[in-house]
Structures are given as structure tokens and as C-alpha cells.
Image (cartoon, rainbow, N blue to C red; front, side, top):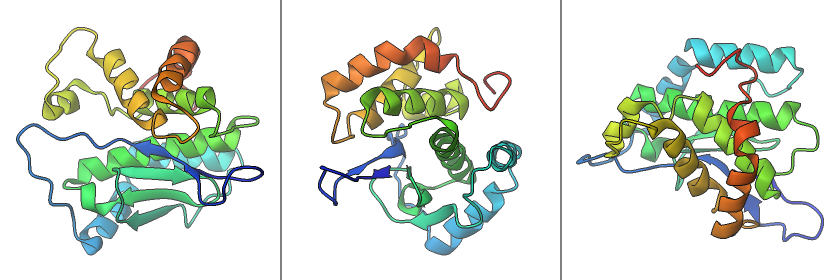
Length: 202
């Protein structure tokens, strides 16, 4: 999610977010703010979160210590340039979900920091970061897909990455659903295979 400057209305925001999808036969009540904050503190010790934090600091990304905030919002989480990561407590029920949201959003934060001329209003730029975040965060691990009610075994991971990237990019006010689909297809091979800062997809 990036603040707008120039000709766009000041209140229009472009969202880089973790999509919320209903789990099969599960009622989402969400976490209390206190439990969510405790979950965020615990997530900071997760090996992948620590790895991303180290790589961001090495790249000169000045985002700590106020990078991650607990919030109440409409998606699972979000990232905003110069504002950081939000974890939407009302969508969280387990520690694993908090870990996943933070990893996903830190990949957006990494992209925002290290990519030259990153423009969240550009559908292709946004699509690339969503593809990377969904692929590299483990959001599309088959066990998570099963919990969401998606039972396909073969080819599930790439299909999931495309589906979840589309859910996020089409919410960008600068990208229609058709433009989001076109952008995802246009950048797919380059961005899916770009595993930075990891040596390979975790």
C-alpha cells in the first residue's frame, strides 16, 4: 500500500496486501489486540522473519523498529510505503497466520526498498511484488490450500500464486481486473523466478 502523490486524490491508496480467503468450515472470530501483539512479538523470532529483517537491514532499508503494527482492517494484512506492515488482528486466529502475513508483507517491504523506481500505481510493479510475496512466503503451501478448500494436487502452487496475486492487484484503484490479469501474465516468468533475498524459494 503506497501513499499517492501528484495528480491522484490524496485519499486514494494502493494496497499491497495479504489476501484473506475463508478456510473450509471455519468460523473466523479474530484475535484480541493483546493476543495479536503477543503473536507479532513471537513472529519476530521466526527464522524467516529474522532472515528477511537481516537482509533488509543489510540493504539499508530503514524500517525498524516501528515496522509492524497490530490493526483492525478488511484484509489479513498490508504494507504501506513509509508506514510499514499492518497485521489485521480481526483476521488472525493462529500464530502461523501472523507469521505468514508478516513474511508476505516483509517481502513487499523488501521490494519497495531495493527495487529501483518501485511504483505501486503501476499494475506490473504491483503484480510482480504480489507474485513474489505469495510464492516466497509459503502462502501457497498445499496444506494451507487444503485449509482454504482448494484440493488440487498437481500444479496447485502456481495456480494459487496467480489467484492470490489477482485478488490483491485487482483491489489496486489503478488496476482493473483485466489489467491485473494482463500484468500478472506479463511479468509471471521473471517475477516467479526472482527469489531474492532467498537463494531459492523456501
